[in-house]
Length: 335
Image (cartoon, rainbow, N blue to C red; front, side, top):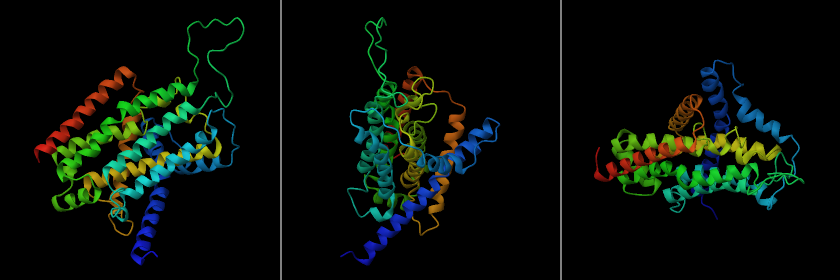
């Protein structure tokens, strides 16, 4: 039988997830309404449109049959992404700190990697163009396509997603491990306890550099401009999401806003030492950090084109070196 303490912990963690999810549905609208629209001097959508009204609209649309070698897995991938993001948030709550396997940065990195791998599978498992099986190039009689490899639109996105997993998101993971050099522990409770005793890691030299690296990695893992190569509208349109419709697209929309929320909470835990506690006023700090990151991302992306590989590689390399620098400074004990 569960003890009262365990039951209370589960209830509080569940309420935290629900509240954070509700707030997350407003984040895409805030970004588009109060950042993109203002910068582009237009009215913009209603705040609840991208994160609430759009998913509701898709929920009532008819599902389409997509050509895929593994249709069951293809359909479940958006749901898997949402579950992974939910697990990430649960791992960041103080109620989960009693579970070492869940409250370590190794678990956080593992869950983030699963979320990234889903994009590769989404692109690799879709063999349709607007839900119609159509291999490229066409094989009609008389067509000349010598030495050309047949592929689907999503194949390009899949290859780009794999590229981003290989080296694109590396800066984010370096930033995640930077707090270890000061707290000397991979476990979230120790990282939080260190900051409560010595002050936020963000206000150290190592932490400030790592925070910059985290923000760039934050934009990369969210596939936001200028790092949006997996769904550049000039060629792969919506990237791995293109063939998802109806309820599956609704889940994709909800997951993106929720992921923005969770990454902001992750920053609060690692760099401020403030985990999400729904029963404390500190939850307001978590929300404020989330909003700041969303607004900064909106400003940055509004002025940015999509990077080509020639621009992407030097940017990621430079950011990676900054991440290494923050770790070295932390190991040296520089305040």
